[in-house]
Length: 430
Image 1 (cartoon, rainbow, N blue to C red):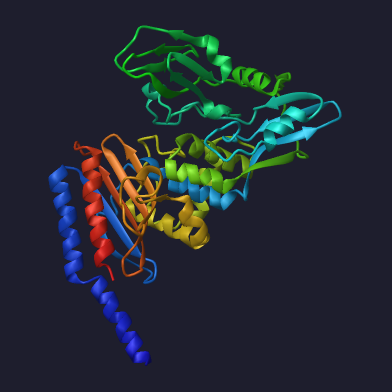
Image 2 (image 1 turned 90 degrees about the horizontal axis):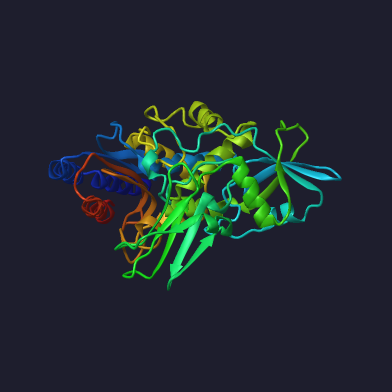
């Protein structure tokens, strides 16, 4: 009986990695690079077999775009507990001093609504003071596109985010609603355009709205310029109580106020590829292990300890992947997914990820009666990546990373080609 089982296992493994299977994949990837005149890398790992079963230029470096969030996700899983640390505080009989932790969920309508931190700040008696002396970041990360300052996908990083650091403008039947209402007097109405626009001046918080008779209903999200003084004014306007900033170092006897369940935040970051959440979460990880709101401490800890055994050295510069300075190899991304799979139970992990044909950035891609892809996309102009877990028809769970760089074709064409290759693997890997 033992010999029969062993023979079956060997036969299955050989079939999965048969020359025909390998040659077909090799030809598909070679044809991909010829067709799109781009660079393609791929790595495929069998969890049950505990080995890499196919690679194509898996040791080459690519721009990961939002696949960078996989590292941020793993960092959060390693450092943070089950609820986010909203802030640290010291309370006395006549005052409350709050030291910022970079919590991105405060009045963020994309996240599970937990009013605990808002209620605590509003209802605690005494004067409210904020301190951001531990914040050492620029508003934009290294290698971000400065001219994307109007993009909803690129809000500024800050010590105490509020409203996702976005102004929401809703235009409906000639009525323009602004949230936060604080910015309503900072909006000018300009000439009509074919398509409506809501844009901000580069160096100020003055916004301009261009209406359109062709489109009478639309919602815009535009980043505002952050500062301590603006945060204070927005908090005062929201909490309906005075707020002051104080230049105070954090003492040792502070308490931590925990707020939002982490999975409700991870889910939005990974499924919707929310750049703002990724950046702020990485700051929170640093603030948890040090006294610094800066990405450096968390990145150093992860690369020196938890990621030191990756196949290739990382060039990792931000939390979201907005920077083109990030460089990863396909086989290193697979190695990170393997670490995540070993750390998080599957029944918790998969619902947090983008699911093919179901939700997030792959809601319209990789469709199947039974979902077969769980993972993360990554897209910047002329670069597209996909990685995560692939469930074969035979029930195997594989980890893969598929990276494409420097193509001129549409990303939709790239995705269609990727989908065809992944479906082949799903249907033929036994």
